[in-house]
Image (cartoon, rainbow over all chains, first blue to last red; front, side):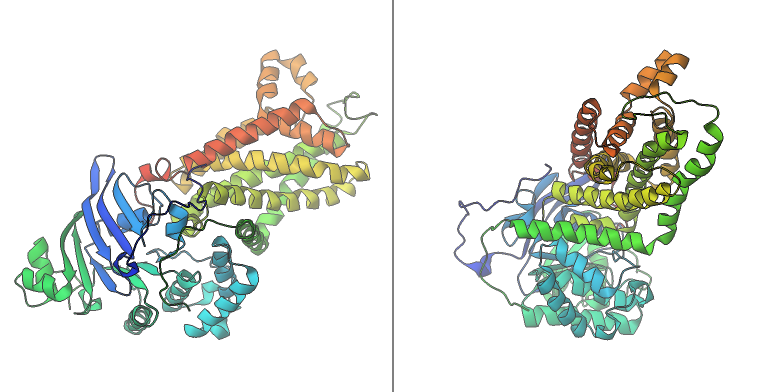
Length: 268
Length: 282
């Protein structure tokens, strides 16, 4: 068996203050593909009920980091914790608190919306009856109830993304990861998805890690992690990151930190 | 929707949750299969071409003496039917693994592997689902073959079921093991040449092994060592309500070995990690 069976352990380390447990903690994580180092000693936290933007250019290591958090790759160095559960040691407990929207589409195009949701629920051990109720609720919430029986193939890009977010919420996670979820969407669909996710943070207290290379998706109240060539260059509340970089806005701050060129389509 | 609660202690997973997961994976695989009618048709046409054309032409060339489990002289069609049943499963096992390579490229595999249940269990469910699909194909073949005078005893249709499940699992695990080593979809053509054809032809699917031994003793040893031969023999005997113990032992042992190796190969810290990021790197 590849992973230690997640059987309940009585000797759980007590944590006195639940608010002090970060939704996600990345602690000294490094990762290499052969000689190429994709992540170098990355450390940061995502607080519960917060929106944390992981800002980086393509190739900065965002997707590698996501693959480590979701256990697609084994962790080579460092530690990843989800609400205090170590992804390496007790992946089951960690992953059940995690919802994730990957950058590439991961829906079954030939199955219906409901079938996609029910399959995901089954993978989390949620009974059929409960899964049906939750699916109907979530489809109503994203305004796709009338499409419940259609094939996913017939949806627009924005609708598919909304469905993927609904799917990621089906098992009621408390941490949501999204890897560049607005890539390829039109302005309206982008705005819808961003406001939907921000609502989840304020209304349901979900901690969100939002990977992006688009500055205009970040708000001043957000936490910011700047990742560049596998290293964290700055982190903290957005206003502080900007001040510390001696800049006026996030765009300039990012370029000062990385020495990068203006990104096509990435600027404000 | 629930809001934040205090931190929960590890609670593990109940048997009901495992069961829900298993049925969900089998259900989804079944749905996908039903949506791919061409796959079903081609899975049936392949053995039927062998049965209707190859066997009809070949039966004058090859005489079959009375060998167990048969009690009378039999037609060549009757002899190769179990081999064709195993062939359906061989193709299905390799095709499931092809779909795993495809899933991995397209990202669907991520949905499965992000489930909190143990990865070994998830892959086992995937194997069972693939086997269930192969059973549908084999029984559809048996129904058509019945009209072609391939009429095993009625009880045989029942006794062959456990044999088919075991051989389906063995060939499915072999496919999964191979898929873990394939980086890209294109490489799969090689599997046809280097796995499916040699396994099928160097086996007892098309000719009894004593015939092979007369022709070439070396080929005979190759056939004897081929796990596919034993899958065929297991199915052949089970179809007539008998057990071939040696084949059962070989198929059982191979299933365990292939399955453990496949699950090991899909371990995140070994198998997938070496290949770099799947899908988009960002």
